[in-house]
Structures are given as C-alpha cells and as structure tokens.
Image (cartoon, rainbow, N blue to C red; front, side):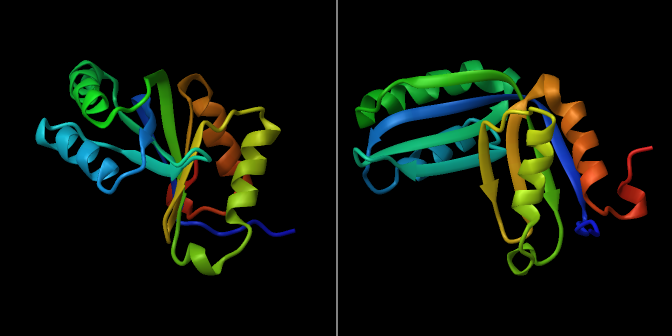
Length: 163
C-alpha cells in the first residue's frame, strides 16, 4: 500500500489546553471568549466548540502556557457572566498537525493519522480540522513519538522529512 502524500507535519509546544464547560448555549459564547482573550493579546492556536446533550456549549482551546494566568482571570469573569460550569486546564500539551492541499477531496488522511498515533499509544485529547489541516492536541511528552509516527506513515516532501 502506498503512503498518502501530504504537505508536511507541523507542531507547537509550550501549550495549555483550556476547557470552558457547560456554558448555556446562547449566541456569541465563542465570540465573546475569543474577543476577550484577543483584546489582552492572548493568541488561541487551536479551538473546538460543540453543544452537549444538555444543550450547553463546551469550548476547548489551546494557548501559550505563559498566558494562562491572565487567561484564567478573563475566563473566570466570563464564566460568572454566562453562568458557565468550571474551567478546566490541562498543562503540558502540544499541537501536532498534518497539512496539504485539498484534504476534503482525499479520504483516509484522518484515519491514517489517528491510527499512526494509536499504534504508539498516543492519546488524542482534542481534534480540529480545516480544508487543508488536521490537528490534534496530545500530551507534550509524546510529541517526539508523534512526529516520528507521522513521518513514517505519510509521504512527505523531501524538505519535510526528519533527518
């Protein structure tokens, strides 16, 4: 079986995964959170939002660990305003992504990526996709294994190969 060609593998470290739990589903939850963080210079590198079975927003995102204290202050204020549940932090995470053109027209990339991580017993904490990128949050201490797994699994451009 031939390997799936992709554009490359990206990663980011020094992150904290933050979850804002059980916010009553109202318009603008994510917009309000992201606007407040951005106004204080906090860059969000990853974001996922969904509505749970109780019709509450669950927002998960990653920020630089050194910005967590400021983010916590902002989020606590928003949590109270929106009658949200708790704010959960998961420190020491990393973001790993595969990218390439036209992922929406190329089946098998997600299954291949997740299987490669699974074979090395790497927990996937959260997933986000776009037309050209598939990103996973994992524990930072497993990043080197994840990079190796993806480099061995996918067909990468020569410049993107690990030496």
